[in-house]
Length: 206
Image (cartoon, rainbow, N blue to C red):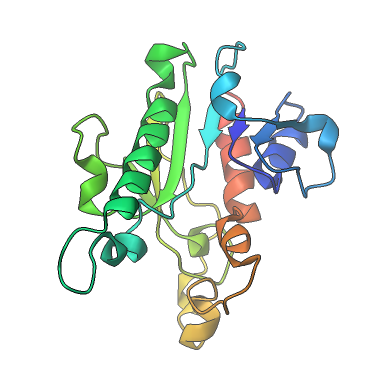
């Protein structure tokens, strides 16, 4: 199960190696294989006998980049934003706790670096690992956290950090400098193929 993925990048990486993988998202897939896509709320499908789940829950209300929106200009709490954050936190936890609730033996949750309030309920532990695209052949930097349960750390496959450092900031931080658009959030959330391939190669054979 590749949860919260409409791009099917990770799903196709596992499929290419012979695994029965499915993406799941409330949006229709853009990866070209609707036969491998479950268009629905993933929480309705966690009890279907998966042996591995890789999940990409929405990060808008949980990542560091959005923490300033939790407060108004006068310093008071932005109550609607806190409610959205709480709902996102609950959704993240439902996925994170799938090993216990839904007997999925191996789980990976992927998200950007979270703000401190995400841990406020005391139920979510600190991320297990931080990875960058440049560790997997992409000339870009984007710190990505992995919360791993019964999975080994993801090993880098093609470190291009030194070559990447020669690029201007707007190239090596392409995602950060991406211009606003209707598709910006979707494009920013797509998994890099090098990372997807590493997941499929290293975790698919467990």
